[in-house]
Amino acid sequence: MRNTSKLVAIFVIICGVQFANAGVSLEEMKKAGMLVRSICQPKFNIPDDQADGYAKGIFPDNKDSKCYVNCVFENMQSMKRGKFQYEAMKKQAELLLPPEIKDSNIKAMEVCKSCTDGIKDHCEAGFALLLCMHKNTELFVFP
Image (tube, rainbow, N blue to C red):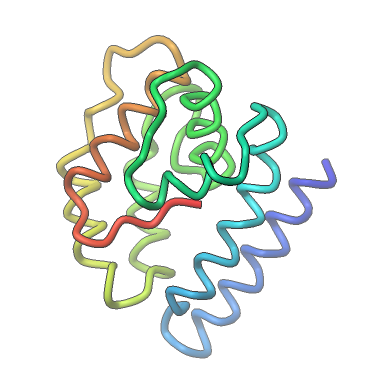
């Protein structure tokens, strides 16, 4: 419950910044992502160097790694029960993403819209979304 409260607080702060400045900066977005990372990283015993690698496109193909990715997406409300929440993620992107990555990410979301269809394992679905977004986004950002 405490972690949920933190996420709600971060969301409220980001929304406040959004209305004041028409979006958050890339740096602010990365800082907010670190909160999500701090929730998911210990759950799946992901070392810092491995977590840092995701932003560089280094994705270990193992169960803990895949479940960490799904945890991040679920905490960001991009995934729910193994399904990509395209509409919700697109709305968040339109409101919150910095201009330098907004269009690229929204286009990637459209391409990846159905990439989790038919995947029953939530961790596998999260990993499929990660790979698709990375492949189709010009500037990939992941906590």
